[in-house]
Every structure is written in C-alpha cells, then in structure tokens.
Length: 368
Image (cartoon, rainbow, N blue to C red; front, side, top):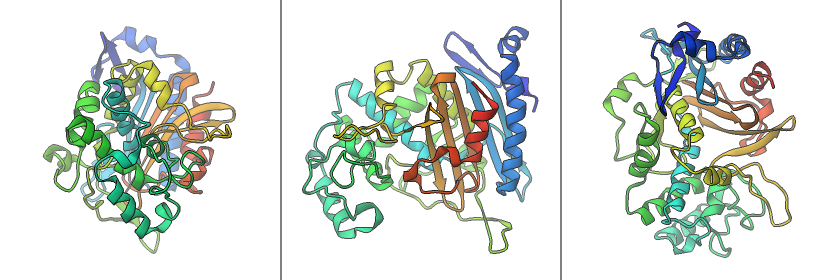
C-alpha cells in the first residue's frame, strides 16, 4: 500500500478515508511528516518482528490528516490474510478513553455528576460488599464502605485507599462506572457508546460486545485472529477473550482507522466541548497537590518534559493496543496488534511510557 493512498481528506467536517487523494491534498502533507512516516513504519515493522507480533495495524495523524496508515504482517497467519488499517481487533483497555467520552457527554447534558457519592447509585453497596469480601490486588484497600467514594474517583483511578490520595490502576472498579451512566441515562451502556461515540465519529467498523451482545457478523468474520507464544517461543493461535459484562473498562472491537476517526472527532469537537476535553485530559491531584498520572480515562504523563496523553490495551496472550496523543505537536498514533507484543516492562501503575520502544520510536521519528 502506497503512503499517499491512505491520506485522509477532510471536506466540510466529513472524513473520507481511503479515497484517492488530490494533488493539492498530497502537497498539503508536510515533507518532514512523509519522511518521518517512512522512518517510523520501518522501525515499527522491525519491532513487530522482534516481538513476534503476527499482525499489526498502524495509523498516525497530524491534526485531522492521516499521514500514515498501514497494516503489517497477518491478521490470520494460517489463511495468509494480511493485516490492514481496517482490520478489526479487540482493543481491550483502549476502550477506557471511549467510555470517558460517554461519561463527560452525560455531564454536559446535565444527567451525570462525577462527584456524586457512589453509595447512592443502585447496586453499588452490593458491589462494594462483594469487592471487600473478595479482596485481592484490586480490592484489598478498597475502602468503599467507609470512605466518601465518588464516580470521579473510579474514573480517575484514585479509588483505592483514601479516595483521591493516590493513583492505583483498578480496571474492575472502572468497569463498574458503566452502571451509573446507564442508570442516569436510562439506556444500556453499549447503546450510549454507539449514540455518543460511534455514530457521531463515523466509526462504522466498531462495536461493543458483551455476554448478551455478540459481535456483529461482519466484524466477527474480519476480526484479527489472536496469537500467543508457546514454550518454545513459537507463534501459536490462542483462545479469544471470554465474554465479559457491559462494562466501561473494555468490550470494544475496533480498527486503527476507526480509532483515527475517533481521534479526528475529538479534535473537531464533535464528541465533547473543549472544556470537557481539558477536564478529561487534566491529571488528578492529591489533596497535598501531588500530580498523578491519570485524568479521566486517560494516562496523562510527561516524556522529557512534553505532555503525552495515552492508553494501552492488553489481553494477555491475545491482543494489545497503544493509543497516544502529543498535544504540543498535534500528533496522534494508534497501534493495534493480534498478540500481547505491544506490552513493555514494568507495571501499568508505573506509567512508564518511555519504556515502550514503539512510543519512544514514534516520539523520536516525529520529532519536535
């Protein structure tokens, strides 16, 4: 696939991806971005092979223009089906930024209050009791029955311990935030995602799935097959992720191009107001003033002094994803893989984005 053939043309707010670009549109792409795209795709393919990722889809945007869209390797190794920018993948926790948009859209509509006590939402006292009894890594210090826990605490990953006092990545608690959203809107959460994200962003190749909502047949047919590594470090097919509930932490199948459409819709203000975007992308702070590495549904960190917004997705032994935005450069990157090869050393709560060779390579190749 030639670089120019995947340029996105923006006409009157409509994104036409995959159309043959005009000479004027091609000339509008900065020469340095073209060179950076060539460097980056070569780097990504080398990293993909080293990580034994069978199939990987890559999109890079400058503002609302797609400057790189490629598929590398195979969506299905056995059938030799190539990965493309429109290959669907399970995006795992990259769902969280999508869910955050739904929460803040409901705030804009006056239906949801992020500072409402969780104990006042239907079913939360029971969830709290069960979580405390279960304990484990996510709930051993989840003081939901003795502390004034709010929806904002769950969405900003500050729910453990004294609420708001520290960052602790708790995807299970984040997943439960779909219930308050559905409760106040009187609409199933998956329907809210379709209404407030997929439809206005034009994400026609994306869908939610859960225990009672199977994946759309067209997406199920095209879905990248998941792979893992066996005891000899050979690539082998792996089991697909099991069905989950209708939670906010995951449950989305999407393509790299559809995530680009999501990114463009954010930039163009078609999903949230600028004020809501800034709220989503403002890192939480402790009562003592310490800045934490998470906003509402997004990691917000600095890499060599530069603000970066990002989220990873990981289904161990099956899928991984990385979505990254650099506001100071008007740059975004989406990587979707059909193995867990996009992960990097360190725990997610450490938020060590600079340990990702894919992220570091992107920031280097698309320099300031």
